[in-house]
Image (cartoon, rainbow, N blue to C red; front, side):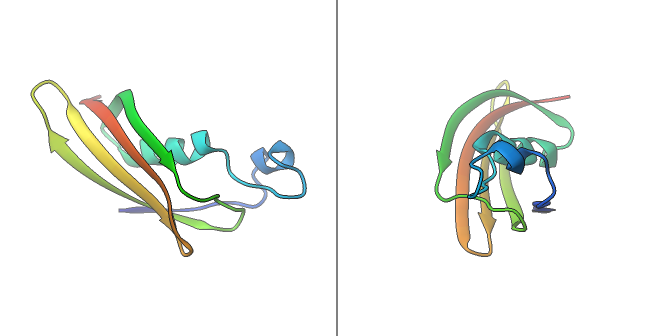
Length: 95
């Protein structure tokens, strides 16, 4: 499990819905990718966004890795204090 503070000063919030800043989904996915040290993402099989991530939130990334024949399957759930925000299924290889 990894936690990440969503910095309100991050420049991404300046242009992503002015007046109602939310973190783009790609940045949520990138925090999952960063938590998977030692692996490289080869495929995104599923992405489900459940609620927005706001400046000042703290993301909790919980990933479960399962060895498959030629890759590692990752099921990741991302949440904040308000509840789940995203779910991902990724295929990985060791980097």
